[in-house]
Image (cartoon, rainbow, N blue to C red):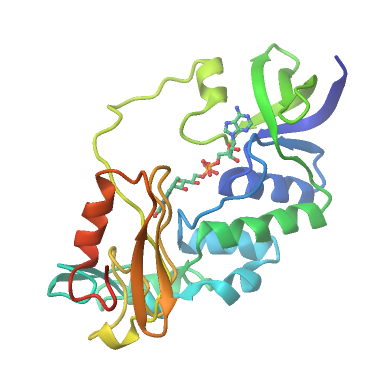
Length: 275
Ligand SMILES: Cc1cc2nc3c(=O)[nH]c(=O)nc-3n(C[C@H](O)[C@H](O)[C@H](O)COP(=O)(O)OP(=O)(O)OC[C@H]3O[C@@H](n4cnc5c(N)ncnc54)[C@H](O)[C@@H]3O)c2cc1C
């Protein structure tokens, strides 16, 4: 088994791992990043990007690239609760420093405003930044085991396509391998709290709903309707709204099970071209 060596081993290439990888490369620290998936995120997932994160993107020289596709802070004003996309509005909450009580605090906290940057668009920019600084990022490469002694971190990684395993030796490791972390499990970091307390369905919606937007945009149901970009895809539920002029249709993948009717119901009978 051959051994790769670096100062830092980063496990994971989501937002945390890619940012760590890019910053390490930017500051000239040798690092290897391994990630078990073959690509960056395939759905929007996390999107609210706070001011401190925007400052880190600025340090990496990519703040403006991200802002170019993100929904700007002035369109992130409201979280909306409604009976359906076109139905009765139940409540509206001013959020992300948009209300008069907090706006000055946010404006004076940083030169970098908040933004709404979907994860599947952010990650390729982070990856590009990391690679442009010379980062070594290995996709389809899974961490199999990790241990540490007084001198080093010792890991075994597996290339998923070939099945080949090799060793990695590093001075430090960054466990950026998400909620079901192999690093945390193998190094014995305990998780606290009860899992599985709730369930949710994410819908990836691309439709022009501007004319149904009676007030400033925003919301957990539609989220930023002015940009029609949101939410995501659940493993067993592939729900999209196809753009069809101003109309939209909910498509529920066979096998969506009970989630299908739930999402159809949420879209509501008032939604254009709903079926
Ligand atoms: C469908 C969906 C919708 C979501 N919606 C939202 C939302 O609306 N708002 C929000 O804030 N958050 C949302 N999230 C959560 C958000 O995506 C995560 O909080 C965020 O991705 C965490 O980033 P991370 O870098 O810590 O880890 P992750 O993005 O989870 O990345 C983990 C990385 O570790 C790698 N990895 C895991 N195990 C190994 C291993 N053994 N060896 C090598 N690599 C490994 C994976 O390949 C991956 O690259 C959503 C998530 C999903 C799945």
